[in-house]
Image (cartoon, rainbow, N blue to C red; front, top):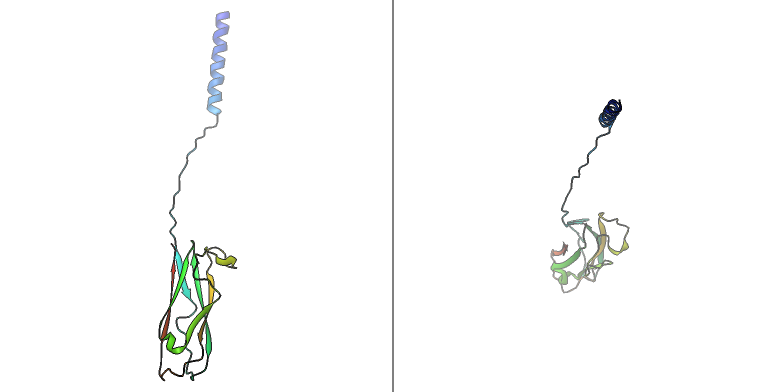
Length: 149
């Protein structure tokens, strides 16, 4: 009888074990690795591609405004050069911007948020148009280059 009782008890334990296993929650986990390489990018745009001072008399001066915009996700440098007949016209460019240094992508603590274009206002000037300049039409060129070292 003890043996029969033991068999019944073992059968009951086996039955509960199978029922418990049948109702146990199953789970598993997996991981996906996502990679992306983000490139350095700088974009330079100008508020205008041409500035016309019109007809001027010797000894007079005039100014025009141009804004240089730089959008970047990395520090950058902006370079400016003047070519053509700048000296004959008394032409110069002045700025409140520091083009000489390396700029973070939101330079000078400006209102531009990271990734938004940073504005660099420039003043184009013809100062005291020289009397020694012959009459005619002259062209000067202002070139801007932005680089991300």
